[in-house]
Length: 314
Image (cartoon, rainbow, N blue to C red; front, side):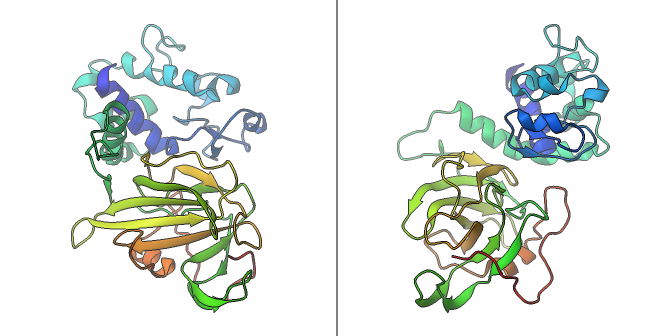
């Protein structure tokens, strides 16, 4: 395949599933019995490339295997579908096509223009995976991926706001102090998603935050690229799937909601630090509204202003 083929595959998987193995309990309840990173609801689509059993891509058991999905997407003489449906190697002169068009030729999506927008992130991931870091450059010298896409860090419909940003009496310590983020109550095990493309700068324990994850981002804007960090606290034990130095993409699952540290119940505590984690935090909700957060299906997810529902806080 070469790097071009791997790049096309990454672009397709980023677009279709944000590089996650998705089960589909609505169409195939048994798909949830296989290892998976989350669930989707697009017709009867499954897995990394959202392949459909009804379209002949394979059985549920086959499509819930990431190795099989990659082999099916690549196709060719050794592919499992023998050219029907067509994999990338079954597309005549695919190397001459724009990368997004090559991905579309396999996926046959109703939204063919989506794939090209993921090429910069796919290139950053490929570079990260195939470049040996140099001394003092944990990211191989490529820097944090520059991105303009921001998503809400929890799936739509899974959460309620439990505590806003600002000074308050801490529910565990009883001390009045700054609540440096916003708490979103959600069931334990709810997928926690990366807010934007970035590089993990910390993944580990914290006395108050329990299991803490910090991601560095560089976001484009009217004033040019701006550095910022997002922090996610009280994550479930053993649910963090990334380590320091890992490149992540917007909307990819990196952990699960938990109740570790100083917490009264399962929830995500989200902090936003323009300028980096060493800089002062700001209220996440106005920041998110400015940057147009979306759910993975593209719908807006921030609620209208109003009274705060009760729920777990930290």
